Structure formats: structure tokens, C-alpha cells
Amino acid sequence: MNKEKHMWTISIIAQYDKSVNSEYEELEYSILKQEYCKHLAFIIFKYDQETEEAFVRIRQKNLFGYQFFKTIKLGKVDIYSKKNNSLIKFFQEYVSSKKNAETKTINKKMLITWGHGAGIGFFYKEFEKAFNTIFQMDGVDTTAKRKVLNFTKKLQIYKAHLSLSDSKIDFDKLIDHYSEILGVTLDKQEWVKKIKKIIKVINAKELNDIIKEGLDKVDVLLTMNCYMQMFETCLPLQETVGLVISPQTTITFWGYNYFQLFKIIIESPKCTDKIISKNITSFYSSKYFDKELEPINGLNDVSISCIDLKRFNCVLENFEDIATYINSNLETEFETSIGTYQLKHYVELARRKCFSEYSAIIDFRHFLNQLSIYLYDDKNEFSKLINKHNEVRNEVLLSTYQPGRLHEPDFGTTYLSSIGPQFASIFFPYENYEELQFFNENFRYNEIMGSTSWASLLEKLNPTVKDYVK
Image (cartoon, rainbow, N blue to C red; front, top):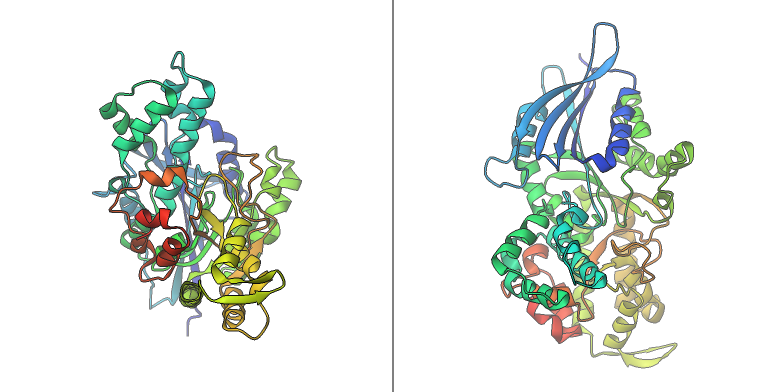
């Protein structure tokens, strides 16, 4: 009787440009340094964002025992196109495989997304280059130029993580706003086209569709993209992903300790999700200490969560119970150490402690912790819900790396949503975030989260947000 064997295929979607050549070479080197084995295949889809050309890189070994990457040139591709998507074709032709019942081989798949992040999706067009024409404008204040640049980044954060299509954004209104900021009249037709090109992303729903059609499912999704660990990204991806490992904060291009990750899979092909998760979090910092890499903020500013999406429904059920409880009791008075106030008052206090100047994305656990300071007493229903949240969180959260700070792509800001995020972030607009006024009336938050009480709760907390949380 044949023993059950595990065969791993690690596919990497790398968005490359010359500015991150050293980081990319380190990624490939971490593969070539490994002992060659037949039960682990490495296949890279290398997309050059400058030329828009793609290459398939397949790890192989020559007759002398040396490892190298065989390169297949695919030519110019459009990774954003929904028709004849080049990533789906790549997966189907070079990666997809099925379980072989005769040899009892279990084919396991890991997908790594490697590319620009800063909270703006799986694939990112470099803003500094894209906005060269703005920076070269005569007579336009530098502060105004920077404001337009950062404003566009904010919009793309939502577009990526809330899975928004261009139809959800009022571009005409947006260009009028940019003209007002810059003090010049921008050609609307030209700039709508320009902005749409700049903020192209593959959002969470689209990535799920690509995985579904190209790979069916993946056992592990490792994203080297900032701010990806959110309720709104986990929800669609749970259809096709078993374990998702993502930063809840920023992450440098040097990323994870790939060498140690690949090493454990080679040595223990039957390694569990828990072992992989612990490997990621345990060896993350050693990469930076060993190599003395320049971006030492990779240690200080990163918070990584490893979430078992196969069991994520229990988290969503608890999340709905918490949202429903708060929604139903906003006007109920609670006596606490600071006095007797309606629940709405305590929610407002807790939300303010999650303040983020530039986005409406906060750490959900941090919010619950702040709310618990006032309401937790081991007796009321809220406390039971919090206990349940801790229980289901511990069930699906296989490992974390801390500390981290959930802040904006504008590095150095003093406005933090929380210190040391510990699970997943969530869309929680409370203040009147300027960029959200450019969502069209046809944007519906429930299209992302499904049937949930969260949207109606947001509307009750602040009526000014009702137009974009319906």
C-alpha cells in the first residue's frame, strides 16, 4: 500500500520594477539556496510594470546539479483585464494540478502576491511616476500637488479593500475637486482616463475569482501587500483560500523570511497551517537582523496575522451578533466608572481611540478592547459576546507578529488606529472623511459584507455617512 505523499507548488505573482530589483533578487535567491527536491515546485509570474511585459520563471536543475530559473517570455499582457485574464491563463497552463488517486499524492498550493502595497491593493501603479505631470506643473503649490497625490492613494485603498469598481466612483466630481485643490482647470476627459489608469488594482473579489477559475483553491495565500488583513478581504477570499497570511499594517519590500518558509516545506512537506504560520511569525525579524537590511521599520511597523479562513464563518457570526447588539442598544443607558450614558456615547469614545486621520479603516479588536473598558463586567450580554469573540478569534488566528501600527501610507503620521493590531481591520467611517464623498450613490457596503447589521450601525452613528454605507 502506497503511503500518502505531499507535493507543493508555490506560485508567486511578482510585480517588478527596477526600484525594487535588490528585493526581488533576494526573493529568487531564497529559492535557489534551497536543497532541490521533487516535491516542491516554484513558478513565478514576473510582471514588469514599466514595460507591461510578463515572464514565467520556473525553478529547474541542470545536469551538473545547479539550480536555475527557466524563463518563458509571455510578451505584453494586461493583468487587470477580466476577459482572457493573463493570470488565469498562467495558473491554468503552468500551475494547476489535480490529486492523483493512484499514487495518493496530495497536491498543495501556495500563492504569494509580491508587489507594491501601502494599503492599495494587490497590484499598484507607482504614484510618484504616474503623477510626474502634476509635479511639473508651473505655478502649482507643492503642498497642493502632494494633497492630490495622497488623496488618490486614499481612494485606491478603498477600491482595493472594499472591492470597488470604477463605476462606484464619481470621477467627474473628483476631477473638479482636484482642479480646486491645484488652482488650475484640469481637462476632465483626459484626467478621468489618467486617474482610472493610475488606480488600477486587482481587488479582493477579483483575486478570489482569478484563483477560483485558474487554481480552484489554494491552501495558503501569503500577501506581501500592505493593510490586506481585513474583514472585507477575508470574506470573499474564504471561498478559495484555506490560510491567509497578511500584514494588517505596512510591510517593506524585503517582506517575509522566505528562505525559512521554503526550508520548512522542503523538510516537512506535511507541515500544517499552524506550523507554516508559526514559521512566518517566528523567523520574520531574524531576516532583518541577519542581513542588517536598510528598512529596519520592517520590524517596528509590521503586524502580521495568520487566519484560518476555513473556519472564518464563526468569526463572521460573532461579528454579526456584536453589530446587532450595539445597533439595538444604542440608546440604552449603562452605568459605568465614568457615569451613566447611552451605549452610543461609549461607542463614540471607543471609536475615537481608533482615530485615523486619512482612512476609515481601523483595528476591530482594538475597538472592542476600548469599548470593553467601559462595558465589560462578566454579567451583561455584551461581555458574553466579547468572550465569544475571544474564543473564535483564538480558534482561527493561528499566529501573529507584533508590534505593528495601523496607520496610513503617509509614513510618519502621528495618528494611529491602534498600537499593535492583533487580528483584522474593518471599515468603520465615523468622522466625515473627505474622500468618501466621491463614492457614487450606487455604492453599497452590504455588497461587500453581505447581510450584516454593520452598515445600519454606521449610519446610525453618523448620519453623514448614510450615502455610502447603505
